[in-house]
Amino acid sequence: MASGEPKSKKIKLEEKTISENALFGMGNPLLDMCAVVDKDFLDKYGLKPNDQILAEEKHKEMFEEIRKKFNVEYHAGGATQNSVKIAQWMIQEPHKVATFFGCIGEDEFGQILKQKAEECHVDAHYYEQSEEPTGTCAACITGDNRSLVANLAAANCYKKEKHLDLEENWKLVEKAKVYYIAGFFLTVSLESILKVAKHASENNKIFCMNLSAPFISEFFKDSLMKVMPYVDILFGNEAEAATFSREQGFETENIEEIAKKAQSLPKENKKRKRIVVFTQGKEGTVMVKDEKVETFPVIEIDQKDIVDTNGAGDAFVGGFLSELVQDKSLEQCIRAGHYAANVIIRHSGCTFPEKPDFH
Image (cartoon, rainbow, N blue to C red; front, side, top):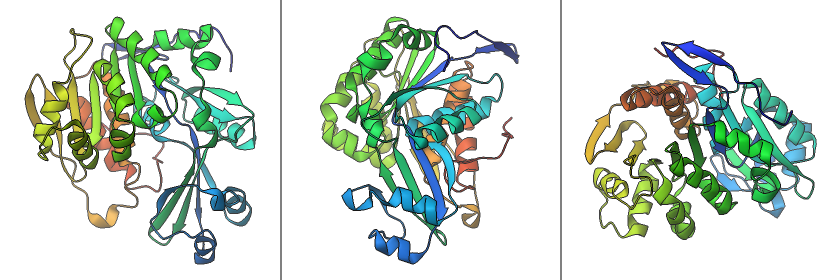
């Protein structure tokens, strides 16, 4: 990657201009490896048809074996990278509206990941190290089922002082006007998240975060609550919202009430009121803004057209961010989120057609 200040290209879109690097994401980059496998392969690694697990010692050989035995499709993955990839796809031009930081290994999988990010026109600047291999996620497909095994490996090794603090990298952070980090990254580098979040707050830019998974609210509650005062837009789904409510002692299971209570938590930048957006699968999406609760229906889809719902949450956020970075209304952001999620669940993994058909 060329260091230094990239030349800024601007494109007119309905009288709006978007610059390169306007959207910044930081998270756990994973190389998604999708393959149709046989039952023997699942049995060998003790996998059930719809498992979603973190790799253990017994799964370590699996990633090499899957590529030797089966026809593997590779994609740039990981929650935050998926979302910025979708945002870039929705925007189309200019390329490199989305910047992404994360850690990979100095290995073949890292090279493939760089190539895949480039194919998606995402401006990925990875911190490369040699201690851990590039993170991978194997999607083992059998019939209509998918077993996901994620090996975070290098993704866990991101170092603020070795990457985020470097002048040429920090310049890219400063160029952005919208920031998005999934809660998963709280397990890797709280100090990196706080540096970015404080920059956004002090410069009245938009910092977005995702609750990501119930275990984040449970086991990384302290880290999450250190970042929460800087969060301008909080995303999550109904399961994550319920766990967050329980851990925060909100004493309610009503998603609208949870959203209102999350919205009113202390906030640093008083110029922006927090917005909370909770998705509920096929039920409507709940948004709280200025203490007002609104519900937006999702696009209807025939059950038989659903291929894989795994990337739906990441896709919703990506669609939302694609409009947010263009200063569109929040209603328009949610419409774009619903559109992107509807496209993604019709495809296997976080994949999509060449061009969006969103108006």
